[in-house]
Structures are given as C-alpha cells and as structure tokens.
Length: 346
Image: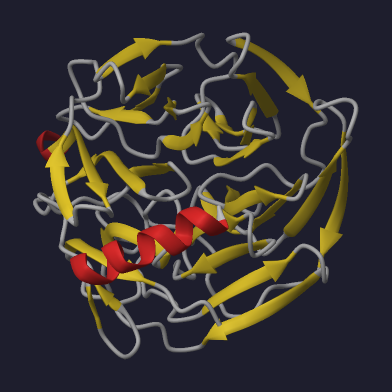
C-alpha cells in the first residue's frame, strides 16, 4: 500500500486542486441523499448508489450509480442498480473486488415505505450486477462493516415491524447468511458506526417510543462488539460512554482501517424522515460536530466542533488517499447536495 500511495500521489495532486484545508473534488453528476456508498482499490474508486434527489418526492428516488476514479478525477454514471425503483436507506460496502448492496426501502405515491430483502453485487470488470442471497431479516438504515474482506455485518436496522437487534453476517465467499450474537441494547435504526480491527462500534439512532406520543425517539446508546477470531458469529458486546456532540439520528459514519478509527459526522437531535422533517414538520437541525472512536485507545475523540458544509443522511464515510469523504447528503438548509465533502483527519 505504501508503494501504491507514493505512486499515486503525483497523479492525485495533478487531478485535484489542493486547498489549504480540503482537496477540491468535483461534484457528483446528480444530487442525492440517503444514498449508499462504497469504495474499492484502497479507496481509489468510490461509488454512490441510489438515493433521493432535490425534489425529495417518491418519484425522485433513483437507482443510478455514480463512480469516481481518483486517478482520473472524473465522475461517470455506471450501470444502474437492478429493479424498477430506487431505494433509500440501503447499505453498501466493497469486498473481494466487488460492491455489495443490501436492503433499504422503497417508497410509493402515498409515501408508504416498504423494506426489501434485496442483495446485489456489482463486479466492475464485468460492468454487471448480480443477485446474491436475500437478507434473512430484511432491513434498512442498518450499520454495515466488512471483516477480513469476506464477512459482511449488517447491524440492527429497521424491518417490517420496527427496529431489530439482529446482527446478520453475509459470507461473501460462500454467498450464505448466518446470525451473530444479537445487539444487547435497545433495537434501533438510523444509527451510525463501522467495523475496524475486529471491532464493531455503533452509536445512537431511533428507538420505539414506549411512553406514547411520537412513534420513535432518539437513542443515546453507544456500543462496541469484539468479534471472536475463530468464530465470526460470536461477538462480545460492551457499552460505551456517550460520544462527543449532540447528533442522535442519521449521523454519517465509516471505518478507517489504517487509522484504526470509526469516524462520525453530522446527524440530527431528533429522528426525521427522508425529507429532513421531524414529527413536528420542522427541518431537523444538523449537529456540526465530527468525532471518532479510536479502537486501539478505546476512547472517543473530537475532530472538529464546527464541520464545514456538514451533512446528514449519507450511508457512510469513505476512507481514501485524499482523506475521509462524504458523497452528497442533506445540508443544514434541507437542500440535497451533489458536493463531495472531505473531512479533516484530526
């Protein structure tokens, strides 16, 4: 990887105009939020999959795929995700040279949301999508992570009857599913997290409101799960202290394996719908805090309390040679963005 980085550095510097704080990365061909994201080739190729466009209506949900190769600095529109409709709240990850896309929900003209079990894999060399084994318990808005470039973990999420505590493990080598040690805390969806160094870390999300009133309220629980070295389905869960900042729902998060950290940015204090509105019909306020959990140090770290161009509702942070990237998402004013945000590392 070191040789690769040294080789690519002159290329990347030639492609992108490097400002004092952030590389200037071209925007995506279309603005989307609630889009799934993934990367391949050590972050050289990045993907945005599906999502909702600027109109924020059911008929503006897309199944398009956008691909940026950092070596060229140009976005292209790839082969669309199969299916008659696009999805929101899906989860994606790169593994074994493929992009794997899991679940999510579709929306009809009455704004009815239906969670699906679909699993698709995209093979760049073939420029083709393939169907993989369906998710046993269909979920949307779940945390995702990959271990040893083989085992993909879907952590929690929302199913037909609400949030679940399932930890579902997809074996990308065998195209099979298994169930791991379930979540010990309150079932949530719209939580945020990732997987690094055999550890799953997740925070917050929305839980069912048992006190009456709004159906869901924000959760402030944070958990870490250590994956057994011999059994990928055995996880030892432990509760973490509260994280920095007030974000509780729709935080954007992702794992940085080389940094041994899970990064988190944005999110809102109250659960909101795909239009960015809370239960009172008001635009949910996005937290400006970006923070991280250091797996080796077992501690939370504040990266910045005033994130430039902060976002919510992107289904992951991607680690690249240019730093952590957020593709699109919803802005503070409720607009849907096509811009690519490069987060500070420290």
